[in-house]
Image 1: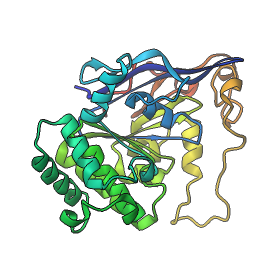
Image 2 (image 1 turned 60 degrees about the vertical axis):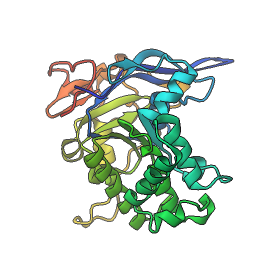
Image 3 (image 1 turned 90 degrees about the vertical axis):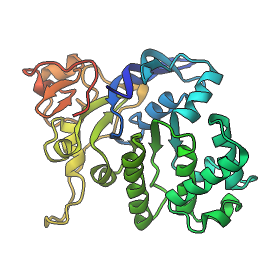
Length: 330
């Protein structure tokens, strides 16, 4: 049974010149306790997918098609108050810059306790004990004293731990983590990654991890969805996607990562740039940059097709059976 199902999701931004389609027919699912990585270039639609799931699309952005289902309940059509309750209780969020998630005027204890009491039927004293426990679980030393400190009294890495504690406050089933390690140095990144993996194991929470860093994906995730120009280009088990990519774009991404075991002077690169939303080419959006392009790619857009252990939106796999509507847990 899937915890989250995203089915044929379309997100649009109306403007004076027409309507920009930023996400176009996105489908995937996440199982309880699973970590799904979402990777791609800037502008591919990774963060927008997370924002749509959390219910925090910036106006005039709107869900224009498809649906988002959490624990069997459709959530993309809920009102503001109903979604606000789900956002704290069932979905936790971790953002790239912890300062955007923390109020600088309040102690972290007040923010944690307020979040806990909003969603759980506990007293002030019980909420404080739980808040201290969450800070200890996320690796904050001397949590009983530091709970009364303000955000500016914490380092960047410690603030991100506080944000993770805040995301876990109401015991959510799903955590959407948008670039949670980008602003941190490498040693702190590794600690935060281990923390996220431990949380999944202990709490049974599913995590949608949005990042541009394939190293983080390889270290953390069970499956990965590779996005390109507002669509899923490939989805499958991390090991298969990294070592046997089925989509030419994924192959290009993998080839551009430095390999310490190989002696080469230059990294491979993907020529060209991802198209603007108002200038996506006909057929496969990747066709102007693809080294394996052929006629079919120029006229018709592929859906996700079975490609061995993964699914890829590429006509090279046309001979295989088409995939179901969304990629299940492998």
